[in-house]
Length: 351
Ligand SMILES: *[C@@H]1O[C@H](CO)[C@@H](O)[C@H](O)[C@H]1NC(C)=O
Ligand SMILES: *[C@@H]1O[C@H](CO)[C@@H](O)[C@H](O)[C@H]1NC(C)=O
Ligand SMILES: *[C@@H]1O[C@H](CO)[C@@H](O)[C@H](O)[C@H]1NC(C)=O
Image 1 (cartoon, rainbow, N blue to C red):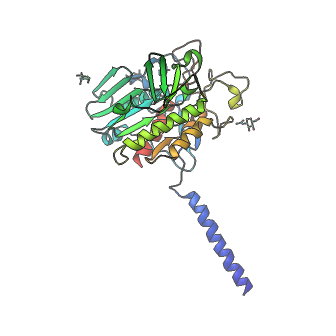
Image 2: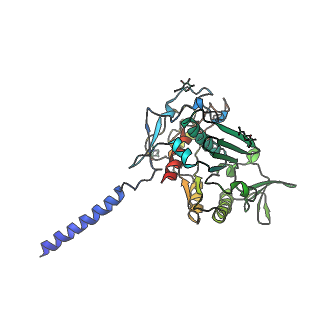
């Protein structure tokens, strides 16, 4: 009797445990953003010399970068494969549709990468690229696919007034028209919130009727993101429009962050870091982005690229961007890491 009960109980426990175990092994269970970089001889995804859209800043091969190992890494999520980027499929899916990117230069990086991924999938296809002020428009004429870039570092309004340039934390009025009626929106902001001195483009911060000389930058950042989130929740129809937000893109100016205390920055790095964690951990700004997104009624997908990009100490332009003397360890070479951001975005669109 007791033996029977114990055996029965053990079987039930085992079933339960195997169930829990199986849940975690579920083929559908996979965090695409957790994993590691593996060498793959078939990379890069395209030959960047045939892509006409790459600005000098990101065009590392053209600028003479001679180590090419950084182009040969595939992102391997833990527990599943990341399907490849199919440019023709993307162009078919977005036939007659429009995609808008709004954000800082990291968004520009992502936009140019997507333009190259699409163009090189049908090389020689007809396109029309125009720029008016801070807005570029690229049309793939044979597909009717439109890619728009809004160079917009803060997302909230930056306005020239009599007293000087004012950063208005509770308004996106200047952008509302431009951002309306697209099929895919891809946003980003973070880097400019910490700029001071000559790099800081505003003189005052405004919240409601209050004008401030300065304030806690993290609080300002969150307030602005709340304003942006309110606009999305009020104006975006999630049945028509997919919305993405690019998580914090890391810079590499301090070797101690990745346990190379003797190293100043990304210059001379030729390979990604091994493993799947970054010694310095995650930047606090990412938690702010996650917090704001979690409160929204429109489901915005976070492109959670922070950790996987932290591991890519090798993927910045360094001396092969705009400056031969001050290494750029903020942006990313194209071809390169932003192609993987777009591959991840493509997979989230397809599901
Ligand atoms: C890339 O394209 C250029 C121009 O067509 C060509 O000269 C070069 O060999 C190509 N590179 C690779 C790696 O295929
Ligand atoms: C490209 O776009 C501009 C601005 O919309 C337009 O004036 C021009 O005619 C277009 N060119 C082609 C070839 O479609
Ligand atoms: C980096 O250094 C920290 C502190 O010494 C250590 O705990 C960690 O394991 C190291 N990580 C790597 C990837 O070497």
